[in-house]
Image (tube, rainbow, N blue to C red; front, side):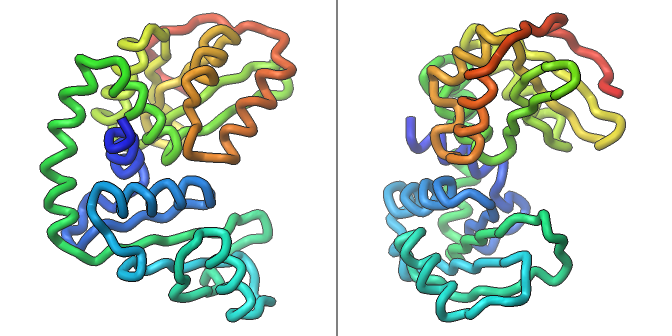
Length: 236
């Protein structure tokens, strides 16, 4: 299941179009640590051969101090700490991981269709894939005015979102499949207290600490159940 979770994560947040190796960028320390562990365990990667770059949304920092801090957090060597070229105060820290071995990408490209086919017939694997891609592209939404709460997966890749939509149905949920004209992206949405609790029980954000915390928060004060689930429509 863990290898499937990693595949799901990489499909969501990895660089799929490059053939130069495996690389990803994320803001969550727990997610990056999961990815590093996954590389080491399933691709026999020596972490010393992995390049890790930290991008900070500020200019006032000491490179050596930041390297020590992030090396301790990630339990790995940090290659560089840089300021983002274009940033705003609310922007988050980015962690980039690169493993420049072409054979690793070739293996992953072979694995993806095999794993995805198996997920459609196995609920445990489906859950693992969902956990992985949600760690990459999932989000927890809470509308203060309407009190609506939901988990979204939003991507430009229609076939991938539709695939996850089918996996969510396979494990007994009733997701919505939407198109956002505003963002020009497809999304699948899970709402309603019962269904969000089911996702929490399966530890949907197992590999993403921030989103896991947010889901716990909205469940703790859930007051209203949402309606109109399981639709396919345009989202305005």
